[in-house]
Amino acid sequence: MTAVAMAPRAPVAHATLQTLQLGMEWFGENAGGLNRVYAQLVRELSRDGVELHGLVTGSGDVARASNGLVHAFAPSDGATKGASSSATSNSSIGCAIPCMSQCPCD
Image (cartoon, rainbow, N blue to C red; front, side):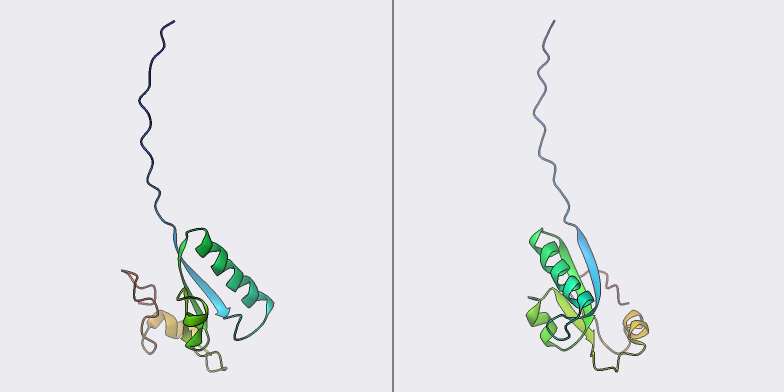
């Protein structure tokens, strides 16, 4: 039998997974099970190399507390009734994700 030498495979370039993570509120501002799970998800995905952008209700401190991964799109003081429609129309809040080429808020 004749052995056939195969050329070594070139390394495959892997695309970075990009996600938009929507949460209710930031755990550091309002403790709760869902908020805790969301904050842990953001940390773990970021640590695993996932490029993520998060949106929650809360204060401007959300971006600082999350190392810039999550931004507040509306205050969480109860004035967020209808915030989802505001977020989709982007009429009053401005884009919370300036680094994306196509804003999901538009």
